Length: 204
Length: 255
Image (tube, rainbow over all chains, first blue to last red):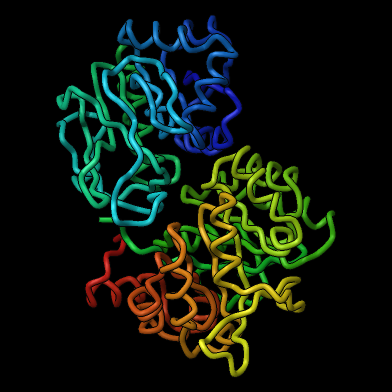
């Protein structure tokens, strides 16, 4: 059973569809207790990090997610669901985030179009089973204007170049997070979900 | 490096794809779900569906189609045509669309851009602009048309693109009415002028007849993505052919 957090994000359905396609059952939750009961937790995301933080706080999910991750239980954060793991974001004049990974979320300051929209390569910086069967530098679909800048470079699992290299995936223990959208990245994206779910359920 | 996107565009009327050639592998070339799967397998980078029917019952049909496509196709989906309100946008996003394309509604009520961007994020709001060269204009300029290219608005296309982006549009889908359907190349001057004016991605549309035309739109027109309809639906080019051509000429594409 895969638990997906519903805080009103518009792309919940895409994530559900991807997991359904892989043949797993899902549970949509929005209470701290249900988060605590999860065996594999996904935080989808699209839009602004400030909005998602507000929604998570309103549902009292911020502390529940933090506790869940701090217990090193299987977690997958997508796009803004990755960005909120850091200390704070520069988006909308500055917002505090979940403060799980030291570092900030910064706006692209490059001589290129922002948002960064489209398919770009992810260079794998960690040899991790979540990338099993996915060749290095495979293209994934991105859509974002801000990127994660973790202080501890050891947590960077994927790097992508847009004007300059930025962190496009983070792995720390059983916490996995991607800036790109695996649910919109064709077969390699589905493979990420499949690998995550296999890892999460094997750890029972 | 960010790749350039090749995006098939499908026109849907009463739940059926119009303007589609008979693909050998397809049982039913008019079925939007089957065509979406076909292009997904072919390596399209995104898909755009334009609902060219008008009534609201047909929009229900469109939402149902989007729902079925999003269960099978794992790439970005944009839906346009007949979207006039925040509720219409929400409806399509909940059905599984990633982006909605606004055209006439955005011109009539520019506030829908900012409200949509605020509620769902700029990435969900594509502003589609149908532009036509103003005869004998010097310097050259283009006028915006609405209602499927029927109604001149008096708006300058470059100024409108700038305004749409400042209100929160995340992408511009730019169609040259002069080039559309001619299959003799995109209007690269138009594309380039707008691409250099706005700081969001510009999708060039209208006029593709050969892979060279797509190359020119990306290089001369400085487009970030190219929309293609007839070249894929009628001609003998597949997405693979086009991407191979672009790749050989040094354009980064997703393999």
